[in-house]
Length: 251
Image (cartoon, rainbow, N blue to C red; front, side):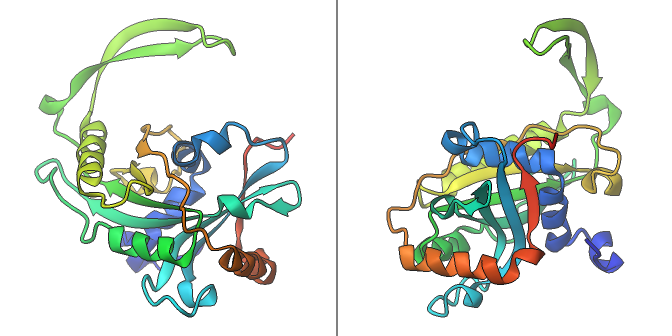
């Protein structure tokens, strides 16, 4: 994606959104927890089509809020959309620092998520993306280490290393706040850490990721089938704009 440098430098929400879903491994970690009963059963030649910042009025003129869908997720199996698993994700940025670990997002995202549920999406989730600086060396703590030896999951235990736990602490804090304040048990919830440097946020070096804290989404009892027909028609019209994210690595 091509984005203005001014947005990148201030770590705008649009940039963080793109950094999240273009990091397919991190997206997969979150999505597998939003939809565990579906993700682990997805067949070969399946995946999801992703499109950010979808104007809501292109799907439903009756709903004014939210004005757009931060990330539209449409699963597919071979050449068919799985519309009953369509998901809308409301994304908020949390820009924390070591000295201000309690920093909140400007908005929780729950009001917008409620609007997405009202439209008739089968699944709705709220995701808080975290960026920060690093901790000073004196605040680092020991962490156990292991090396995966084979496909059966056998491990070799390695000596502990002292690492910066700030990403873990921030995700636990943000996710705990989401759980306590969430007004709807059907919403999926997630707190994911993007990084502390521009390279980490952009996943330039592919240095791994921090496992996100998540809660699964529950199917909306008010699913609107007529609305899902509109979602399918929207995809047919704008398919070339979606990002294809396969469930499995290509052969």
